[in-house]
Image 1: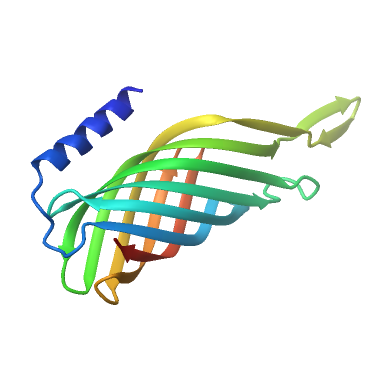
Image 2 (image 1 turned 90 degrees about the vertical axis):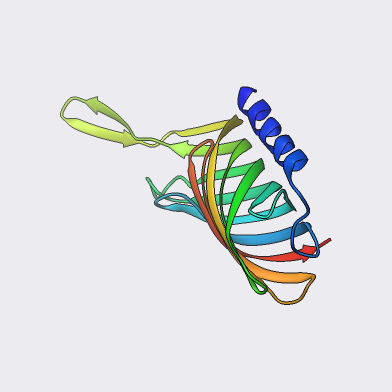
Length: 187
């Protein structure tokens, strides 16, 4: 809860201290879909919607809602493991490059995740000389939170529409890598 208060205070102070953004519009909605990877053998897709707001000439803030669905057979061919999560991400971006057509953002944030997982770990039973390996299923669900590090490149097609790519690494329930294109509409 302390981290939420710190992030909220930082965003509020940036909004109060900031002047108007030099671009025509300070708000945007971004829609993204891309590749997500949890650990080797467990991958899938992610879908994200984000609202971003310019806080100053070199700072952007945003809130994103993300759904990630990954599955695979990383440990055993008999058990299909999966991770399904929904998260709320709070981001603060530094904007080192801002031209008429290009925007580069580098940022960090905090993610609150609600997840369901299925994992399978080996259990070895020895009965005499013979070793029997079983792969019991372990289902879990819960919520966790963690830090996000991300980067975005955005190309402005017009004053209201742009395309870009987002790369992020999130540490909430596990380290999740996400990369995908996005479409942004200025409000």
